[in-house]
Image 1 (cartoon, rainbow, N blue to C red):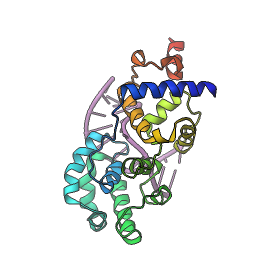
Image 2: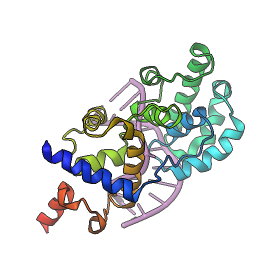
Image 3: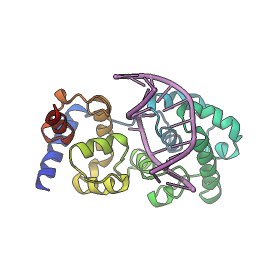
Image 4: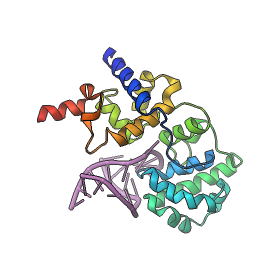
Length: 215
DNA sequence: CTCCCGATAT
DNA sequence: ATATCAGGAG
């Protein structure tokens, strides 16, 4: 417990030094676009999402446009992002709901957002944090993996991990911290071949210690 | 727990 | 060939 605090302190110091300008790497110009881009980014790199949304947002400029979309055509539009049937259906359905129930403007409340199809806490927190100044911890695959390796949580469920991290990280840092963790994960603490040699936190890391123990 | 699912790194 | 990528729903 006391040890977790110490690890978090060092982690935050490292992240602030190394990833001081971390931010969302999805391309968007308004909350509507970020919401759609974040849904498309599930199990897909931001790079590919940006390639798709670059043309997609010229064709669909509002929730009304997606609500009216031809589903087959829309599926083709987003195909390279993977899971395109589910994503297309969810975005169309969600857009219909936003048009009907919310007058075409997305709700800015996490409990309302999460009710929409295709939106979980991860997606909701990305949009709320980056567009509406409402801090939230984004538990994606990177945040989950790093938090587990460093022993900041014993849970495997993203919702529980989010709660564990909320206890450890100062609220005003939640959004920025999430982006810093994601860059850290892509850069050093990757899933496959993490660069433990260049990680200042390896002495606290279960993954690194296990790896050394076996060797 | 399973399914959705294309693109890329290893 | 296979694991993984800014997850979420049933």
